[in-house]
Length: 482
Image (cartoon, rainbow, N blue to C red; front, side, top):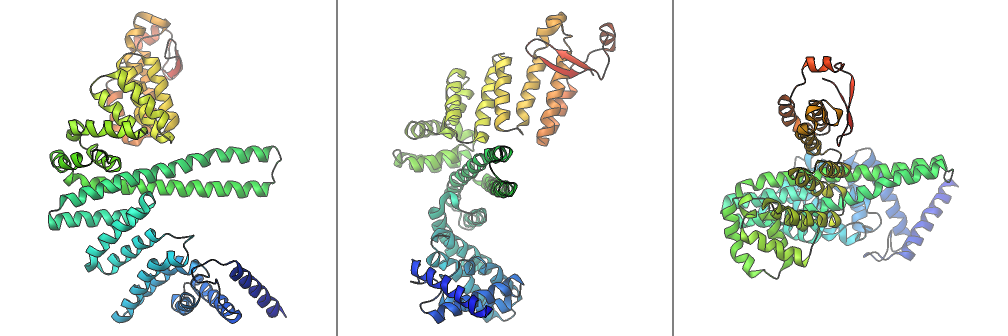
C-alpha cells in the first residue's frame, strides 16, 4: 500500500514537472510514465550511492540519467566532478581512464545545455579547459584559447581557479615564445575583471550586514518567532561568510597575478607596447581602461604623458571612483592639493563600497596633515577607519599628528605637560599594530623615537606612572602616563 502511494506521488510530481517543463529535453523526467518512473528510480540509486561515496556503484545510475533524462536534476552534473575524479584516480586501465576523462570534460561542455538556468556556457567552457589541462597538459594551447573564450563570456564572474590557470599558461607562453604581449593582455583582463569581482562581492557583503539589525529589531518587537529569526539570521550569516570567502579568494588570485606579472612589468617595455595601441584606440574606452589599469602598476608609467592622457580620456568619458582616485593621485604627486582634494571627494561619492572609500579618506587626511590641519586630518582618518577598521596606517597618521602637536603644548599650553602628546601618540601606534600586524615594525620604530617625560617633571606635577591623564586642547583624549 505504502509503495503504491509513494509511486502515485512520484508520478504526480513527474507529470506536473513535465507539463510545466521548458527544458531542452522537451521533458524533465521522461517522455512517458515508465520513463519518468525509471528516471526517478535512477536518481534515487545515484544519490544513495553518491552520499555513501560508493562512486563505482553510483556511476551506472549516473550514466542512465545523463543518457535518458539529463534535464531531470542539475545535481547529476553538479556532483559529477567529485565522482569522476575519484574514479579517474582509482582507474588503472589507461583506456578506461581516458573514457572517464572524456566524460568529465563532456559534463562541463554540456552542463549549460541541459540546465541553462543554473549554469552558464562560459563557465562550462572554463572548467572543461581546467580539467583538460589537469589530465592532458599536452593540450595547453587549446586550453589557453578556451580559457580566453570562457573569461570573455564570464568576465567578473570568472572563478579564481580559472584565473590562476589562465595567467599561469600566459606566463608559460611568454617564456616559451618570448611573447610578452600575451602576458600583458592576460594581466589587463585579470586586473579589470578581478577588481570588478571583488567590488561586486563586497557590495553584496555590505548590503547584507544591516539585515542582521533588521531581523534583530523585528524579533525584539515580537514581529517574528524565534524560529523565523534563527532561520533568517543563519541565511544572512551563510551569505556573508560566502561573500567573505569569495573576496578573500579573489584577492589571493589578484596577488598571484601581480607577483607573476612582476618580470614583465618593466615601465619602458609597457610604454613601448602601448605607444601604437594608444594611438589606435583613443576612442575605444574599454581598451583604454585596460591599458590604464596596467600602466597604473608601474611608477615610470604613472609619470608618463601617455598615462595622464589615457586617464583624462577615461575619466572624462566614464568617470568612476577608481578613475577619480587616480586623477587625485596625479595632482597629489604634483602637490596641487586643491585639485587632489576635489578628485578625492569625487572618488568618495563615486565609489560603491566602504572598503574603496577608505583610501581617499586617508589621502584627504594626509593632505590636511601636510597643511597642519590636524583636527580635520584626524576626522578624515576616522572616516577612513569607519570604512576599513583594519587600516593601521590611519592610526599611525593620528599618532604622527599627536607627536607633531608638541609645540602647541610647550610651556604648559592648554594646561598640559607637552610630553604627554608622546603618550597619546604611542597609544595610536599600539592601536595601529593591533588592527594591522603588518605595520608592527613601523610602529616599533616610531615608538622608539618618541620623546620622554622625566621622572622629575612627573613628580613636580604630582603625576604617577600607570595612571590616567587627560590631554586637553584639540587632542581631547585620555592616555596613560608612562
